[in-house]
Image (cartoon, rainbow, N blue to C red; front, side, top):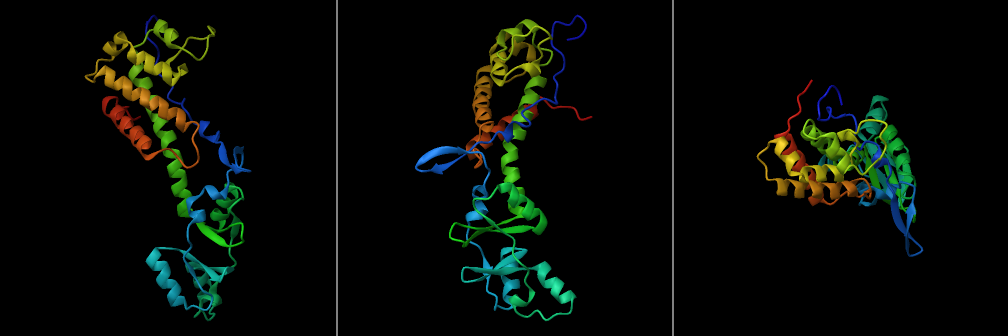
Length: 279
């Protein structure tokens, strides 16, 4: 707080839930019980256990091209029964043609396949995909159970990151709405995080539940001066609080679609009523 103003400073927009998503705890069945597993495993990836489109080693390159174009793939696993013979890709074909070598059947223009097990660390898969643009996944029976590509990794991170980014934006915009409209005494009254008097309490120091309690106060609501219904707004904000708690302790499969939609909708509402000026 500065000067003699009775209201709080501008919020620290650099604070938020960044980093909390790293506290993911995986659960899987072991001996009939649900036990925590600290390792993020390849089996969490949907594409790691999805039927693989493959080609045989004696098939023609034209057959391979047809499959790749039809599925919009950059590569195909080359299987002889359950045995992996290699990988056929636009790159592997192009390298052989550039060297002036015959490349009429698939086995003439394949490369060794990058393979990982379902139980391996998901981060090993990320590294292998970064090097090869794909990695084949092998199950407990040593059969290929799926393939993970750079597209799958991008899709995964988008799915996992969006709820955190939405929650962060909601928190920042809530702070903007409250800035200049809350007294130090009101902050202290709703604070449930610390009791230290060593530094002035700011809006960014509050929990999300404290934000809800501030918006429940008629005097704070009246100072904000918007035309929304207080009761409905507070109910929506409290719903977001519950979803936020789930996001911060989420399972790697992500949150339910309707909860993600609720985050998106409330973020849009806040954007409409509290636009933040761009620098």
